[in-house]
Image (cartoon, rainbow, N blue to C red; front, side):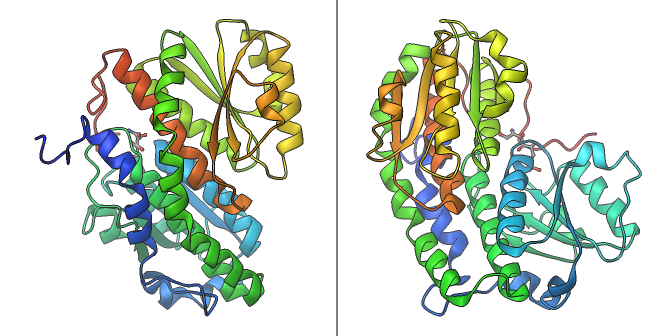
Length: 369
Ligand code: AGP
């Protein structure tokens, strides 16, 4: 087993460290930065349809649903197509309005999740075109969808999804750019710029992983917390949700992800000196707003752990602990900011003596309703 873990103590840690490679694999043969082109063979036959669609519905569960929220942000931003993101389990029982003009994107690591499969079947019956984003080649979901794009992250053994999530986000980034290319909502020079940057993301993830020792140290300071809040804005919000889910599933600490600005509408009441609050506080369009949210937490003596852009000085003055990630355009922030959160939950869980790879009560894929 040690061999299978490649020398790492747990599959989860191995899979976290595999991300520079898995993201590279996911992009291979699909991006052409010099030409400013994205090619997605799996959905090519629907390229024309993408020029005229009115909306996209994304269905998924758990971590895959969080990837869907990042997808919503990216597709709306770049391809200007309205997107709705639905929990498959809710969507399937709601008699939703779906037409032949809709494209449904189903996201699933395993390709076997029962609720996601049922949502696909229902949308298919109503005439929608279904794309899949799946990691396991030949699984049930890729077999029942009309077209799709594999994530190619390689087998994910840890029950807590890590590399599959970042690969899903990578595919959604590629899809957003592909749709933008079809619709002409991005100029080719802008697309060239974005793809050149995307091509460097694996190296930047490698750099983000260098904070491991610091994250381990921070983990030792907050490992006994009973609750933890994760806050972010824009595409930092789904990252916060994912950070919270990781922490609760493997360390059994109650954690919540929230849009930072929503904090004052309720969760702020929870903040005291016992409460660690993890902020996604990187330099992007919501930076200044996040800074004022950090001040609100500090004024109530909360313990702030901030994910910041390399070289940041502002947040460092306020936060108790800062973890740097390389600078990147807003589009790529979720890919980078997720890495320290994965490591944080991993170290906390190990320190609490939890079974990191097989957390209690959880299965790798939920094939029951
Ligand atoms: C992730 O860490 C979870 N264990 C879980 O939320 C998972 O993402 C969810 O069950 C969906 O699985 P799928 O991607 O295989 O469909």
